[in-house]
Length: 99
Image (tube, rainbow, N blue to C red; front, side, top):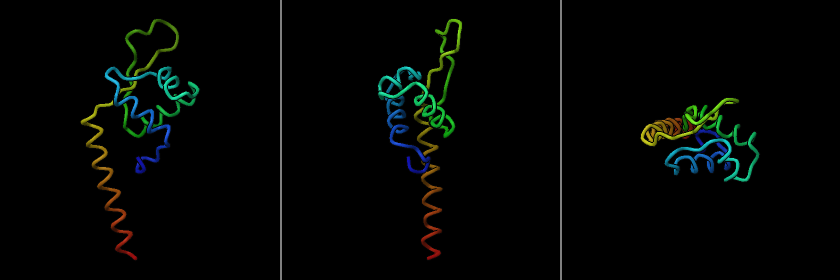
C-alpha cells in the first residue's frame, strides 16, 4: 500500500471491504474501525480516488442523502496493484542505477 500513500486506517478499511461479500458503507466502516463517520468518509474517498474501491448507490436508500456501498473488484484491483508494483520497481531500479 506504500505505492498508494495509504495510512494504516486506510489499509484497515480496505481489508474490511475486500473481506466483505456485500461491500461496506460509511457507517459500518466507522463502527468497525472505531472512528467518526467523517473520517470514514475521507478514508473511503481516498480508496476510491486510488481506484482500489468502487462506490455504488444503495438500492435501499429512501429519501434524504443517498447511501453508498463500497466494493472491491478483486481481479481488477490485483491487476492494478501488479502494474503499480512494476512501476515502483522500475523507478527504484532507475534510482539505484543512477548511484
